[in-house]
Picture (cartoon, rainbow, N blue to C red):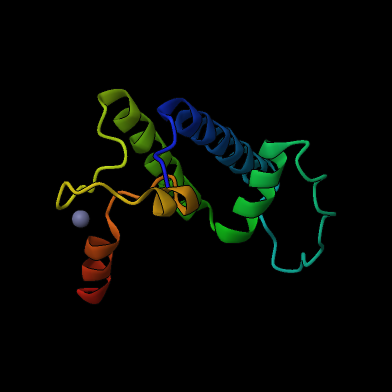
Amino acid sequence: MENQPLSIIRQRLMVERSATVKLLQKQDLHPADDGDLGFSPPPTHGQDDEAERVAFLEINFAQTGSLQDYLKEIDLALSKCDAGSYGICDSCQAAISPARLDINPTARFCINCKRKLEENG
Ligand SMILES: [Zn+2]
């Protein structure tokens, strides 16, 4: 698998970022209350990447705290794009596999280091 051009990665991160910011604003306006188990209809596929990401993030980052952390990770990944160090493991400086970055564009560690970190708790 070829590395994706940085411009595509950056664009993806920007969509991710604006979706995260949008969701943070939404949570500010409507703090989640425990009784709300309503589901919103799924967004129209392919028409609105951002709406799709908002829906995804809403499921995966239910707590505002983790969303804010995620926003920081996105900013870090964007600054790495600028610095030319995007896709390089923070720990061992090995290239992170494109497949891994495709799943998790803000990944900071290669799979080996990630495993080690998780083992060490
Ligand atoms: Zn590593």
